[in-house]
Image 1 (cartoon, one colour):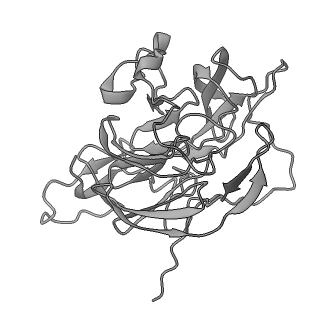
Image 2 (cartoon, one colour):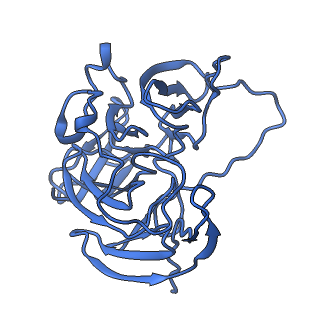
Length: 313
């Protein structure tokens, strides 16, 4: 997987970006965009929609964290409601790109019989544009990520799904792919397993599957309950993985300047090399002693969540 700088010009008639193949050509006016990504990936921002939310947290300044100005006028609820038990709701911040809001809804049911969904809605009218339903095992607190024309959906059953946020999953999820470009599947044999051969320290008591996704330079980065850090390309082919010594929960890792920083329940902060996944260093942050309610023995827990790099100058 190779990323490089790409220059785009805004086509005001077609309302889309077109790549500038000859940067030395005469400038004809209009908006330009510059991105460091693989070929074929268009920028999320447009002249009309200059601020998109494409992931939750994830970069050095946590600039993807969301803020809002609340209006005094009465607005329309955009959220999907289901009056059934177990409870069903939106447990993670929605994303926004162009005129579309993408929100993830999960169930509080446990076991692989529960269903979750991702819905895309018109950000001004609330009209539902499409819906993608998939099996879940917990309440789906992990944040999505958008890169180019696709939203990446991780499930508590161990999958990551790739869905076109413009057109949706297609009939019978025919346009949804998962790891290694495979078409939509519910077969656990193809999912990231929850089990690990490592004796995890301070293992997370809740949560399953892959956690909040971070997109950077053509790659998706994430933590997993079993203490793994993964790097995938945009076709969900595995580039590298790293096994930490502690379990994880739903928080994101941080990617910046060639570094991947990830915290775990063993109380350590891990810093990995972005392109290879090799450990650069790890440092102890914090643990405390708790009593395991099942065994009555003392265990060490230390939650290190989203790291933030502070830059001077």
